[in-house]
Image (cartoon, rainbow, N blue to C red; front, side, top):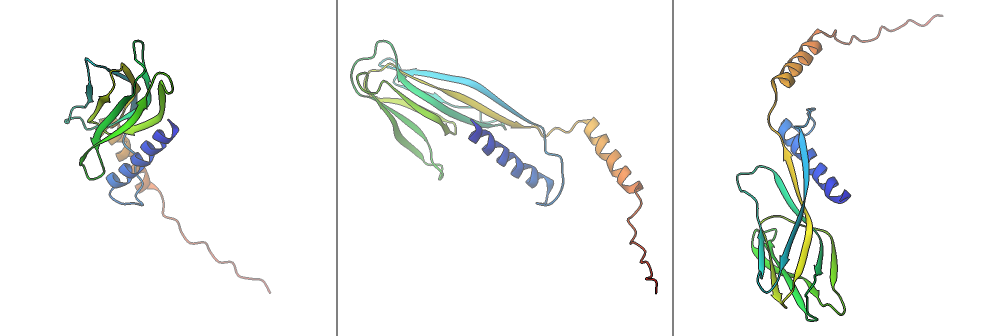
Amino acid sequence: MAAGAAAALAFLTQESRSRAGAVGALRVPAPVTMDSFFFGCELSVHTRSFTFKVEEEDDAEHVLALTMLCLTEGAKDECNVVEVVARNHDHQEIAVPVANLKLSCQPMLSLDDFQLQPPVTFRLKSGSGPVRITGRHQIVTISNDVSEEEESEEEGSEEEEAELCPILPAKKQRSRP
């Protein structure tokens, strides 16, 4: 979780700098909200796939952080292969098996916050399940709205800066003989 928060803060720092117009410009970053919601789905003979997607009109950054895959009550002692279909860095759709669960030797697998960008499809490639997938849906929202109060505060601080006297150079003292 700390790694995800650090990545989000690094992203937000870059976002703040790019909005300020220059790398060295000082500017108060836009308000940020970070929400995290529990995620879970089950794959079985009846439901062989599940797609997690978000609304495209949404300006927020969405991340699906998977924590665990496990066989649940009623699972048979057979290989249950779970595959994830998502997009790679070139925005091409790829399918990757992430788990091979078997009741007698590996009934669950910890994914340690394996992070994916939606849309993501989970498929039960082989086996009958049921396989439970759990994780967190994380949403980072950067608010671009500047309230009237903040605008008046910025104007007030600019006026204060204008009223300050300029810094004068120090007077040199003559040395005594």
